[in-house]
Image 1: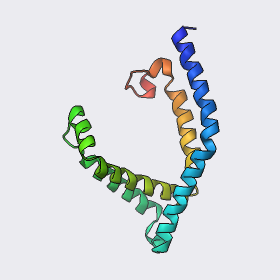
Image 2: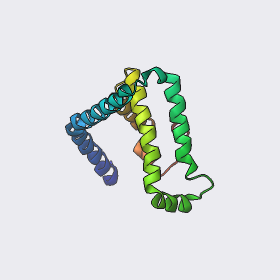
Image 3: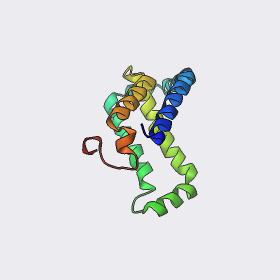
Image 4: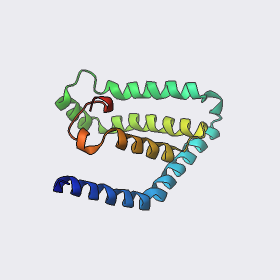
Length: 141
C-alpha cells in the first residue's frame, strides 16, 4: 500500500475512534437543541402549523433566503459576502437547522443516527482514493 494512503487510512481510523468518544456529546447536543426547539414551539402552540409538508416548505423557503445572499456572486465574491454578512447568514443557517431538527423530531427520526448512516453511505460511495479532489458524482467516479 502506498505510504500516503496508509497514513490516510490510519488517520480515518483514528477519527472514527475519536467520533465514538464524541458520539454521546454530539447526540446530547442534538437532543438538547431539539428539546429547546420543541419547548419554543409548544409554548406558542404552533405544532398545529408544523405538519411535515409545512416544515419541508419552510426549510426550502429559508434555504432560499440563505441562497439569496450569494446569487450572482462568483466564488471570490461569495467568500467576501460571507465575511461581510456573517451574522445575517448565520441567522439563515440557524433557521434551516431549527426547522430541520424539528422535522426530524416530529417524524421520529433520530438525526444523529440518520446523519451518521448517511456519512457511512457516502464513505462507501466516495472512497478517498477515487473522490479526492474530484467533484464527480459517485456513479461517475
